[in-house]
Image (tube, rainbow, N blue to C red; front, side, top):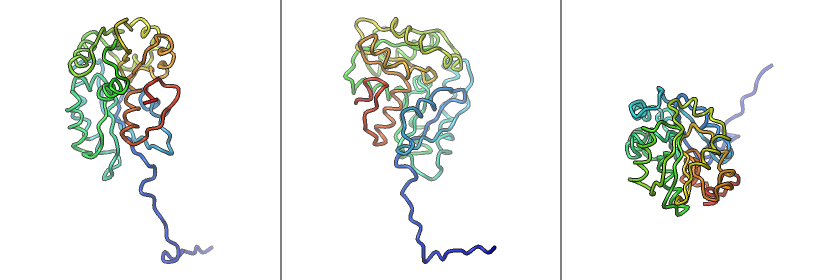
Length: 253
């Protein structure tokens, strides 16, 4: 059977500017179980394309190991749609963003994708505090005391007043991802202090996004989590401004 080839002069193929209107790049640790799933919960694939790359990471979660992630960000960003722009690139690691500093993370990413907005859980959390007019926070982390103290110090220096910072003492992000949501809710209730206007739950490995609504109901205050804030800010910077129900007060902003 012969196949007839249409004359391209007769039929003109039209192209969209992009296959999907908005583009978000997501860089996660090799050991991450949670970030991609949380982005999938909240990002409409007909509205936003989420393009993921992983970087090498070694447990335990120490400042030394977190610092090693920095130089790996440039290569990871470069492999996301080479030669094409992204609206946002998010680095999904709160503790590494603290150890490296937001400016350094942006430099690594902009070396490959200079036009992309750079989002980290830290700068996303600061933007969330501003949007909700929050000045004083309680912090809950799954980390060791050493890493928690470094995070609390960074927040105090660059963001809201930290009333207290509780930690669960884990040093392996794969185990952090296994902490039951019920335990996160219970730990969050215990962590919030009277003087705090909101609770921040750190760590992109934690399955805390699904706990936000229940925790807000129990403590009567806003709850900001690493993944929740990262997704919210990534969507807003890419131009998606619609409210999303079921994941806390932040998504009304």
